Length: 620
Ligand SMILES: [Zn+2]
Image (tube, rainbow, N blue to C red; front, side, top):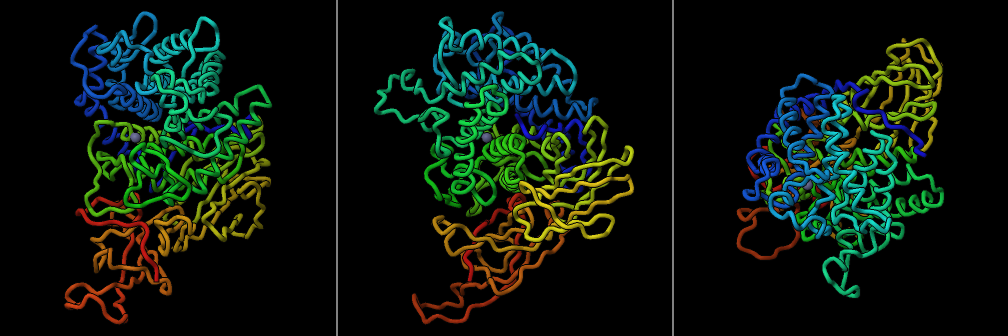
């Protein structure tokens, strides 16, 4: 029942000044780095141990397999676009290990095979078995689509069939769901790839079982003492009101629930799911998300506390959580055909998620604070290495998020230079978009091939843009809006050039006054990019600076800085330092110095000498 159908990245050739170099870095630097680390850290060796029937030597936490599976998924996307990439040999080798490691009954998990064979499915809350299986399934579907090979898909199906034989409503099966949602959305992908309805039913079973508080039983916790919110086990799924618990788990769960809303044949269930999803989505984006698009405000549970509680220095905003929010937003966008979900997706993509990987592609943030004293840095790897392969698979499959299509319309959701080939209304269609986004304001769209035809284009009008303008062949076109999109329906010829201009004026943003951490402060935004100030760019320590609101902020193209950015420059008011202040502790208020400041995109911070960083600054 989706309003829109996805257009796969396989149909989209990205040719973009901002993203093409990033996809190249992802392919040539990040992917080899990931597989080298997965070998060094033990993820691949663990599976070799399992394949060889060994019982000792396992390294790392219980969910090590999942990091490898996400890297395999990223590699599959790369292979789809670059079939001869050298990563193919590694991928084939790993698939061989997985084939050998898989048990005769289909089970596959290196930890439980090497360390604890008698503990299978005994701690669903903490041990991530179904989560790991979910990432295997996602990797397998990606690999199948990329290469046509069914090798990894066969492994995943055998495991999914095994899981289906263990879990379910039937008397012969047991109840359960995973402490870390993921398998739900994976099973929908497997259903989509294979057409096997059992996978869809199993996903529905896991989704609708959640909230039965089975983890209380599993861990002998009296129900009156049990708070299952970290695993979204506090309420039945359909009764969820707010986003709670662990941020990545929550967003994966609601992504899976959105899949169910799209796939179920039960109209009552669909309606109830939609009501719940929109309630929780609004809570998430209106009260619990950072300006950088990420979610999860506290480190203790990697998740949420309360509405408007969005501290900056201790912001958690895990890279995976920004990505998970994008997965959820994309599914809601397809289901409902509304641009607002892509507004959230874009905000998370260009800010919270993109900060997760360094410009050279080899260092990663797990935690993404909005303020730093200069001691928080990207690392080459983590003991819990969920984020590095997650950002890699996102960037490799970025083309998934640019376009979508309705029955009679092509939707443009992101402005990324690209060529898309699809079939619309029974006829092939190739469109080309050119843009200097996110630095430049215009995107031009042309019909590249095909006969003149009637075509309905839906262009997302970003919420950040006050005054979008449309032109066709240089002549202004009145804006006709629908669900956050500009509707352009006309008879097209290949000579026509449609131009969308999205003026990108630097804006001082403020937060809802209930956000205590941001009161009397501003953040800088230009287009989809949220900015920060790093002390190394400033004439004074950040803690003494406030933004002057009466002075315009200018955009400055800095091609040599941080891979090429538009920097923002304005005037700050600066408190006197010790030398100018003297020995007094207090004094009558004086005029303060005014000095220029420079802001850089948040995603690009922590690439120069370590120094304090802030997204929100006082304003005067
Ligand atoms: Zn992560």
